[in-house]
Length: 305
Image 1: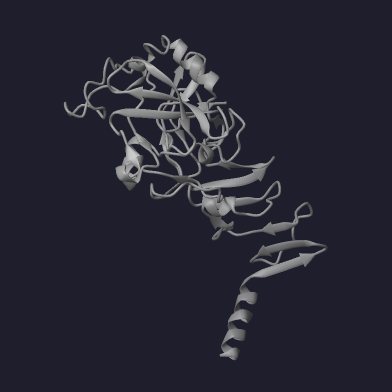
Image 2: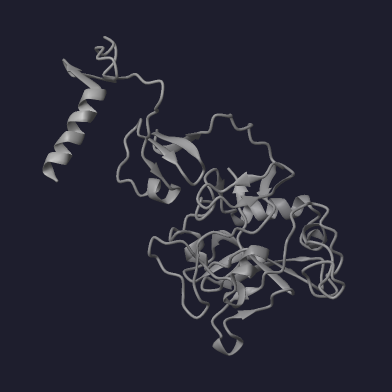
């Protein structure tokens, strides 16, 4: 076996010439020296160069990448390079400059989200759905893993209504209002003041719910809300859906109020255990300026930086 292996190696060396000179390397079939200006000079008309191939998750696990590090991302089918503290991508065709109203792709899991311009703000027009699903009977934890609840522990409910998150998980265990938290790069968790600006632009808390809720009812087969879905016209395009909540009452299977209520967190803390939210109900056109325990699992929206 050793004689056969040596024969194979010798045959390869006879067909492939590798020249090394003063710290320069040439790989070719004709024995030519490397070009004076190159460290590595590869010449071939039949083969290419394969860079490391990995998923986005594997790429993000690289310890202390340096500027100029280069890989092929098999999650996005793009070449990625590291520069200035973050990974950049190029895919052969340049991406159009983002304008609000365009769909965005979350590079972490390739989920797509609609966006909408309302006044001077650009919002996601869908609830965030990122993370690994855990059951509603346990709390989300600070374990470097993004965790979410899906109503009644069904992934299909996350796909329709978005994930449900405890406040601290949403904030990545940092209490500073207005930070990125679990939002995609370039987006952040809206502070209470940003929610106030949005709702005032749409007519104030007494009326804005009508412009923000999706239309139709379950009973009519035309929507996600239970009747009457009072006044809903979604004229803003914000598209609030009634995802309910995850709570701490086992007698109710830890979930309640899907198709009746939408609870959406702000990033503004009230005290050590409570934070602000905006709540939408099926039987009123107003928006509730509410406060909930941080252990409640609520929906999440992101706003553009």
